[in-house]
Length: 277
Image 1 (tube, one colour):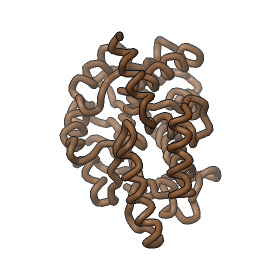
Image 2 (cartoon, one colour):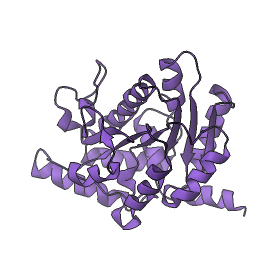
Image 3 (cartoon, helix red, strand yellow):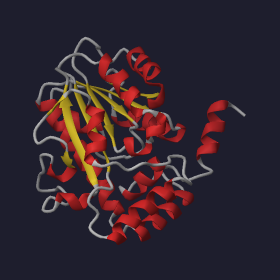
Image 4 (tube, helix red, strand yellow):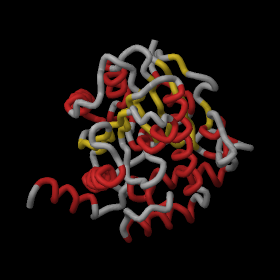
């Protein structure tokens, strides 16, 4: 069997975080095994779908802010399967000149294939691309990004890693992977990060539900690790966090559509944007 086909087949044997995310966002790129898993975790955490939508909303607001701050290049690592609110759509809607460039990166064959089909239908191949690369091989990933010819490493880049780092355990050394990428970015670049948190659960019942969620993801292609704000903050290195800092995602430049905007801590999602000096 061809290696790519084997990877696709292997990814269908277990639920995939990307496809579960797609399910909760109302997409169609998922399978029965993903739906069954999504329904299982929904019974444990009834608001899990809203948490995932919160991550997606944060991405949109962050991309709009990056464009307003003058950044025209985006690299979206772990871009996944969602069909709405993709980085290039948000960037183009924010900047009608349509001069932004986006490279999507994913290591899941189904997600990559979907991204390539999506871009074929809705994107500009002169400005947008989807490539296969692994965050855990960050130097190789960056080399592949540059090989697209779309990203000028001499100019600021918005590096987006949204709702991904909770699928990278500390044992996999995310710190050195992020350090590698931060070092390759030009001054003025922006780092957009978010993940789910287990900080300040509202009750012992919710604390256990979050622990159960992590346990459930051990059976998927993407085992998980939730982190507190303090544990997550290190991923920004010594870069300056833009206002309002590292916060619950609904508190980051909320708009009238923002879920949990009245009580951001109920979202279970933390996020922030930092600038390279």
